[in-house]
Image (cartoon, rainbow, N blue to C red; front, top):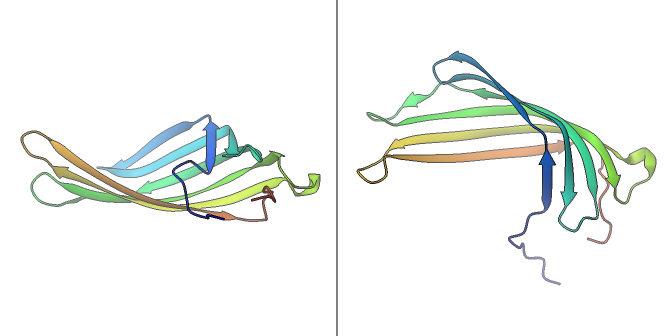
Length: 139
């Protein structure tokens, strides 16, 4: 059986969202992201989760690189909690608790005559699962 990845998504997420930015200085601060209510489905629709979450993004001060270019980054810490509504798990094992940790880097570079600015973004996020989560046993 071919275990190669395809271009399709593993998980589809639909959620509500709220963000608040707390500015501490020039291009520095905290971004609070809250997802009060959302759904998470796997690509085969074998597992459905109802979840909430919150994350704080600490944006570090930017550094100038050249005359009109800047680099900066952020550190993320948060949580996701919820319940599996459909999946292979007994009723007492349907809870979800994940710690979310991440980091990002950003570069805003001066462009030329046609392209005025070039933005480069990279991010890394890991969800640390606090307990086994229900999953489709047929995968």
